[in-house]
Amino acid sequence: MSIGFDTGTYSLICAKRNKKEIEFNKGLNAFIEIPLENRFLFNMMKNSGVPLIERDGIGYVLGEAAVNMAYTLASLELKRPMSEGCVNPKEKSAFEILQIMIHSLIGETSRDNEKIYYCVPANAVNTETDAEYHQKILHSIFKSYESEEGYKLDPHPINEALAIVYAEMEKKAYTGIGISCGGGMVNVCYAMYGNPIFQFAIVNSGDWIDKQAAKATSESVTVINKEKQKVDLSKEPSNMLERAINTQYRIMIEKTIQGIKDGLTNAKTNVRSAGAVDVVVAGGTSSIAGFDILFKEAIKNANLSVEIGNVVRAENPTYTIAKGCLIAAENSN
Image (cartoon, rainbow, N blue to C red):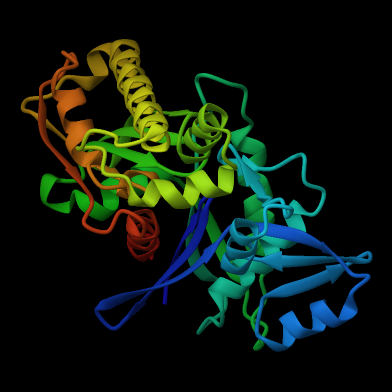
């Protein structure tokens, strides 16, 4: 039983196949720190099934429970083990927390040295990132996994935008442009017959939108993150909060399309195409209502050096990358 894993900045998603159906196990990649002076509160949360760990006198609330607590209590700061698509260097507990959450989502495996393909970003073109270091950190996390039976994993990285091509473009001979709009980065990959022609990333995706909109409205990042799920980008904003979110989404789309333009120019003769190139967009940041309409309109009007064919959002954008990673793992056996 092969495994696919989306190691996203906002969500962690494990994909396994049960007969013909793919089953997904999802967790939110976030935590908050709570003081342990009040042991009663910590124990009550633990008895209620809230995912918790305790290290060096600090309590950590993990996953969705952390997000909900930070949304309700403004005094609590929501933290991320990952930032801008990579392991967060500012969080000393990031590695351990990420390891605990990833191993928990994988659960049990059925044999030793099971193939697992996990997604990694490309290096960003607009800021300094270290995708190679991030990949090695994730590799060590997957390598350290051990099931109750003592089974280990055989981990392999795959670019997250290429995983979208594998998940959605089988009928197009795995040829086209995959765009992953995640929490930390926008990742883009143009592939031909499953082979990447060019790939790049931009740090201006979900978290960036939240931070910029929070500055413009004096709201917290957590509030913006929750409220943006209610926004429809195809409609005129009705208040300042909606206007800020709408504007930042448009800026993100403009920067992404400019990056594709630059990528096509730099790749030169390698990206000649006999026909129109299809585009599939996925990732949690693309799931907001109206995103697909806005993106399709923008890329069709961009005068790219290749003809753009169908532009679609994946049917289930949150789970597409994990699905693509699973397909890669299954086809590697």
